[in-house]
Every structure is written in C-alpha cells, then in structure tokens.
Length: 223
Ligand code: HEC
Ligand code: HEC
Ligand code: HEC
Ligand code: HEC
Image 1: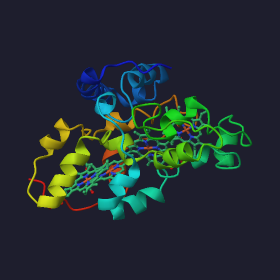
Image 2: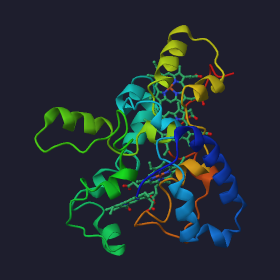
Image 3: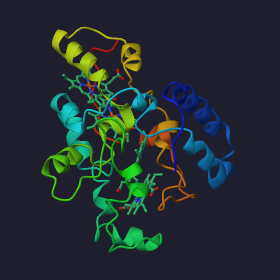
C-alpha cells in the first residue's frame, strides 16, 4: 500500500477531503470503498512528514509532561503493545486476527501503530539484538505526538525559542514550521476501514473525541 501524495499537496488535500467527508450523508461515512480512496490520499504524521524529520516523543515530553503522561497511559501511547502476542486477544479473535502471532514486525500493521514508519527520523523496525536501533524504536513506538502534530524537526526550534523568551506567538508560525492543522481528516488517516478492527457502525464524534485524546494544557502564550 503505497502512500503517494507529495508533501505540498497533502495539506490542501486533507482539507478538501475532510470537507468532502463531512459533507457525506451519514450512510456514506461507513462506505469502505469511499473511505479507502479517501484514506490513501492522506498520510499519518501530517502533511509535513516528507519535508521534516521526526524527533521523537521524548523531546515533547520535556515541556509537556502532563500531556505526555496521559498519552503514555492511553490507547495511542500503548498502540504498539496491541501488536504483541497475547495482547488484546479478545479484539484480535473478534476480528479474525491471530492472538498468538507477533505482529510487531508487520509493516501493514505498524503503519498506524507507530510514529512515522520508515520516514526520516521515524520508526524503523529494529534488527533483533541491535540495542541502539531498539532504543530509537522505543522513542517512536505507539501513535506518538508527531503522528498527530506533525514531524517536529522545525517546530522544535520554534518551541525552544518561545519557551525561552516567553514571548507571544501566532499559531501560523508553527503551521509554517510543519505543525499539522488539527481536524478530523487527520484522525481518519488511521481510523478507517483499512484497520482490521474498524467498526463501521461506531460513530467517530471528532468534537467529543478530540477533547479526550490526552490531558489538556492552557495555552498562555498563544495570541
Ligand atoms: C522547549 C519546550 C518545548 C518543547 C520541547 C516542545 N514544546 Fe510544544 N509548546 C511549548 C510552548 C512554550 C508552547 C506554547 C505554550 C503556551 O502558549 O502557553 C507550546 C505549544 C505547543 C502546541 C500548541 C500549538 C498551538 O498554538 O496550537 C502543540 C500542539 C505542541 N506544543 C506540541 C509539541 C510537540 C508535538 C512537541 C514535540 C515534537 C513539543 N510541543 C515540544 C514548548 C515546547
Ligand atoms: C497514526 C494513526 C492514528 C491517528 C492519526 C489517530 N489515531 Fe486514534 N488510534 C490509533 C490506533 C492504532 C488506536 C488503537 C490503539 C490500540 O489500542 O492499540 C487508536 C485508538 C483511538 C481511540 C480509542 C479507541 C477505542 O476503541 O478504544 C480513540 C478515542 C482515538 N484513537 C481517537 C483519535 C482521534 C480523535 C484522532 C485525531 C485527533 C486520532 N485518534 C488519530 C491510531 C491513530
Ligand atoms: C489503517 C490503520 C491501521 C492498520 C493498518 C492497522 N490498525 Fe490496528 N488499529 C487502528 C485503529 C485506528 C484502532 C482503534 C480503532 C479501531 O479498532 O479501528 C486499532 C486497533 C487495533 C487493535 C485493538 C486494540 C484493542 O484493545 O481493542 C488491535 C488488536 C489491532 N489494532 C491490531 C492490528 C493488527 C494486528 C494489524 C495488522 C494486521 C493492524 N492493527 C493494522 C489502526 C490500524
Ligand atoms: C491522536 C492524536 C494526538 C496525539 C497522539 C497527540 N495529540 Fe496533542 N492534540 C491533539 C488534539 C486533537 C488536540 C486539540 C486540538 C484542538 O483543540 O483543536 C491536541 C492539543 C495539543 C496541545 C495544545 C494544548 C491543548 O491542550 O489543547 C499540545 C501542547 C499537545 N497537543 C501536545 C501533545 C504532545 C506533547 C503529545 C505527545 C505526548 C501529543 N500532543 C499527542 C491530538 C493529539
């Protein structure tokens, strides 16, 4: 499954497709073929993923500890664990997956269960016994901060600077540095019928769910 769109096209494409998605009558939302076509045009990790490098969840942790902790103990933080044998066995059995199989080296699964699979700085399947690669992979395990907020190599520079100077900033500065514009289309890059456990009947209420993905922080410097 080749994800094809160029970085420059992905931003507008996400927006346009999200609008299309939202404009669909409820019955069409569960249409696997439409959702499949839709999902293949957008990439997890954000539109900037091809242009910027992933820096790892540990970087974000330093300044956003409360968010990090709630993320770590939540479903996105633990998403790689679900691919291990003996984990989430009931869900696997229900959806025709083998509860005893190790899916942690299966790229068809990792794509949505880790951060930036095979992208610059992103998750790379470690060779068994390669301690350095294993350590790096741990940094990028699960649906990390950058899976949703975009690869952080440039935003990190802005974050460091606004943290140090305590100055006010406009979010547009961060968008220019690769921060993903948060909207339902981003969630749907993974929450779609290509997920073997996807439930077509379940409602994906973005406005409600976005409040629950992790603990919230009041933004005091944002203008
Ligand atoms: C050096 C400290 C620091 C690091 C490291 C850091 N941030 Fe931040 N971040 C900040 C500060 C400061 C703000 C603005 C807070 C405020 O307005 O009170 C911020 C704001 C944000 C925002 C809100 C942007 C907006 O205006 O909508 C997001 C999202 C964010 N950070 C994500 C991340 C992610 C993801 C990482 C890791 C790649 C990260 N941060 C790393 C300090 C940091
Ligand atoms: C990079 C892929 C990816 C993106 C992007 C993503 N998710 Fe997820 N999400 C997952 C995976 C994988 C799981 C399941 C983790 C597990 O249990 O192993 C999950 C689980 C969840 C769950 C828990 C579901 C349940 O049945 O318990 C919620 C709620 C959720 N995501 C909401 C969101 C929202 C809201 C967004 C967008 C702001 C989003 N997700 C973006 C991959 C993603
Ligand atoms: C297109 C993205 C995507 C792919 C590919 C994907 N998953 Fe997931 N997975 C998700 C999302 C999103 C969720 C949470 C909501 C749902 O079930 O759709 C999830 C949830 C799960 C859960 C449920 C965890 C629980 O506790 O309920 C298991 C188990 C799982 N995935 C295993 C796999 C395996 C094994 C593969 C490969 C054969 C795979 N996934 C491929 C996105 C994906
Ligand atoms: C599944 C997607 C997802 C993941 C993973 C994720 N976030 Fe977020 N983040 C969101 C959403 C959704 C919002 C709310 C955006 C909005 O209100 O428009 C948000 C908001 C924020 C904000 C702004 C403050 C706030 O509370 O609104 C910061 C800072 C932030 N995230 C940091 C992080 C950090 C650090 C991590 C990793 C530890 C992380 N996020 C992981 C989706 C995600």
